[in-house]
Each structure stands twice: as C-alpha cells, then as structure tokens.
Amino acid sequence: MARLLIVFFVCAVGYQSYHLYFGEQGVKRQEELAKQIAYQERINLRLKHRNQALRAQVHDLRQGEEAVEEHVRSELQYIKDGEVFYRMVNKK
Image: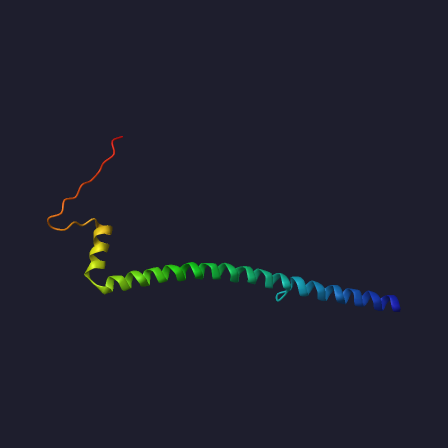
C-alpha cells in the first residue's frame, strides 16, 4: 500500500512539474513571451527615434522659408536665379 501511495505521489508531482514547465502558462511560455517583448521594445525604440527625427524635420519645415528652401535644394536639386550649377561627371 505504501509503495502504491509513493508511486501515485511521484506521478502526481511529475504531472504537475510537466505542466508547470511545458503547460500553456508554464515557464517555457513565459520565456518565449519575454523574448517577444524584448524584440518588440527594440523595434519600438527604433521607431521612436525615427519619429523624433521626423518631428524635428516637420518643425524645421514649419519654421520658415529657409528650411523649406534647404529641403527643396537638397532633395530636388533646385538652384536659385543667378546661380551656376556645375555637375562633375567621372570618366569611366
């Protein structure tokens, strides 16, 4: 009878241990979720920095014509009246 009781308790502890580690709310699942959270936090931080840069750019563009002019000249290669544009081409 004692052996049967010991076997029962060993099986019960084994069953509970299995579910504690591999179950739906187990340790293994918690580790996976912690990794997913860390990954998402890295993505969020990168996007936060990008948003701050975009906000700064929008703020600069709203401040005045100088920022708009600088943006247009750098992105669209515009030149002012009276300026001379030189293009350097490498020979191959």
